[in-house]
Every structure is written in structure tokens, then in C-alpha cells.
Length: 135
Image (cartoon, rainbow, N blue to C red):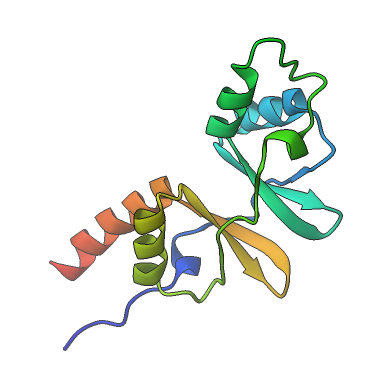
């Protein structure tokens, strides 16, 4: 008898920090550093409009003359991030992340950001599943 595939809500990071699209990159970088995170959902009011990663920050700030105190999050974010629901099966989510080389999924419920599922979360889930399903 096989066990059902778990859903993302079991492994996602809940209540993720978010950033407004009009924040400066310097403010977003400070938030990410302070909280030891690599992904920030980007909001326009209550609407999810993008995702800012540490990689996005590194890329744009490597451009000569780019000033993170002047540039805005909207200038560096990835629009239309990969989104899933809390009840999305983990196997479908990680397959999509791997195939499309996506570092995270924003978890949405009723048009609200309720979590984030990152590659690190996927590794933790993988370790947990190996320990519990193969035992």
C-alpha cells in the first residue's frame, strides 16, 4: 500500500516576508540579509506582481553605475512568479521547479500569499520523505 503524496503546505515556509514593488533594492537587500532569506514575493498593494531573489539583486547591482539606493524592486524582480496552492502535490511542484529551473514557488490561497516553497524546502522535504517512507 502506498502513502498519498504530501502537499506543499506540509513543507512550505509560512507567513513569508513580502516587499512592495516601490521599495528600493537597498531596502529589499537589507530585509533579505536581516532575515536570512533569498526570495521575496513582490506586491503591488494586495496583488502579487513578482518575485525578487538574491540572484536578481546580484545581477542588477553588478551593472556599472547601478545604485541600489535608487533602483526599485520593480526594476529587478521577475514578473509573474511560479505560484501554487497549499494543497498542490509536492511531486508536481518539484517536477515543475526542476524542469523550469525555478528556485521557488509562491504559495497562494484565495489570492493571498500564504507561503513560499524554495529549493531548500524541497531538499528538506526530500530528506524527510526518504526517512519516513523508506523506513
